[in-house]
Image (cartoon, rainbow, N blue to C red; front, side, top):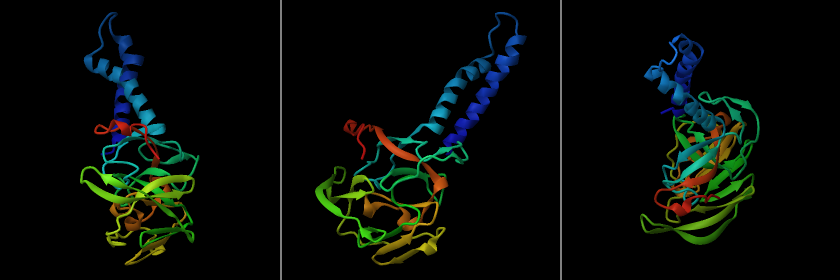
Length: 262
């Protein structure tokens, strides 16, 4: 469902009603006559819907985390806020960038439109920038020939499954974050789809190496063995970016999650 398009249609529809009433119909009614119900409701809702549309399109947008691919950073059921202008101002609905601002940096957690199906929103961490050479083999990440160190920390407890997973701290750019790596999972399961610039990636039973094309990004989940990401469906083009995740504002099952984010 394209919620931005629905909001836009509602803004236009209620805006037409408000303008029709304010500039023409009201002047034709007898003094003291009430507005028709459809005019009253349409005109009342217009400023509210317009404010929500502008806020959601240009400032922040709420998202709910649907899967465990970003555990332990983000859990299923977290409600997050996404900064919509960090990576440039874009026109709503068509998502066309009209003002250049910042570019994604390694370590950023980003919401984007899923390249194989842009009607879906995904959230992952930026691992590779345009021009980077990314290698992920035998559960070791290398960027431009430099192996990214993993520091072992306390195991992560999945309270739903009562299952412990080894947790490591990793630093990408200036961002230190935790990742999960399951020692018994295969190094790489090849469930790859065809994607643009697929010739820039090379696969074997140990993993993948890719050169990130210009204007694209390589994304990975923090739950490394339970994330469908750029290793499997390719690069994320700049025009698919929605915004940078900045804040957990609610979680119905765990109020301690509010405000936490790395």
